[in-house]
Image (cartoon, rainbow, N blue to C red; front, side, top):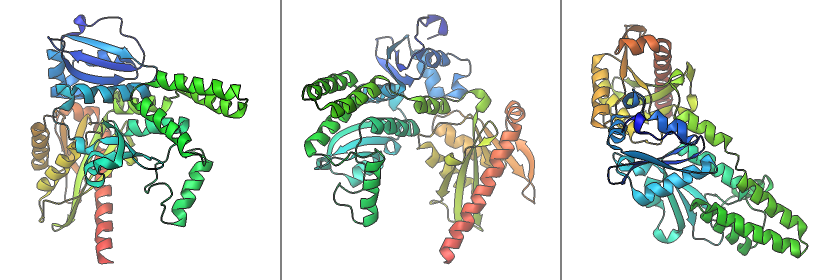
Length: 409
């Protein structure tokens, strides 16, 4: 499909879009803060570099694009997840490791808890009989958690580690009381009232916001008829919140995931060890010459027991690529020469991911001596490359020293 084949009347609103094949089969489903901007972004000349070779192939195969508008980014996120789960489009599901995705479960308990659980923990920690409702998987981890914060401001629910009423310490009980006071957990209420809240959360995650509003409007009128005006006012506030969902945080998160070229995400990798002992690795992230420290990651090397930096780097990158909830970078920077660069490129190729790799070669004093890779990229991101590499070295050494220190205690 080419841009000239694209309809011109795509709305500048949140929603979900569908790339369709020759027989109207759904090839790919995505969500957007702006349907117009997101869909048009697939027709840029460097789509392969920005997204992946797989997405480029999908766009070529597609014959048309359709979409559904939503009232908010939050509802687009939920609709996208439900539709992917229903239709399992080929280009959404290929090469995905659902074990690292987030799922939302509502437990089957006296006071059900609403919990975020990773796919791998879902199988290991919960039996089928423990779960009343299950939604997901949600690939966009950060986006999903922001969404849940918005929902919890409208519908207060429990997300305690232990079932409600079975807290094992005074601190845990105190935390429940504190969260009630600040409006995250429900006030002390009957099981029937909380059951109603859980029903509304379930309907909302099924994409049935209008039904929730209809039920709340009926409840508000009944309370007003009984002259329980304060309770009716509380319900009215919920209705207003649902009709005017403030998802500014989601829009910001969405923009972070799909960052523009000026603020390209550059990831740096380094390995630290002492003659092959206590080997560790790290990932650092820089965007627009700003370290994104909340996105730094540590890796304890599991498959290498001797001094072999390229093999350790291979393990780190393979593990990193299983985390599909982490946005892919525009550039990867490795600490080392051709050996490390070749290993990184091989891992990416085997995973079907197209990301350019830059190597920073050091001298005997571990200072940058030369940079190897695409000359155009080196010129464009020179300072960011050196920064992310320096951060990776600092972070790796710090992690290695702490690990060794912990072992000596």
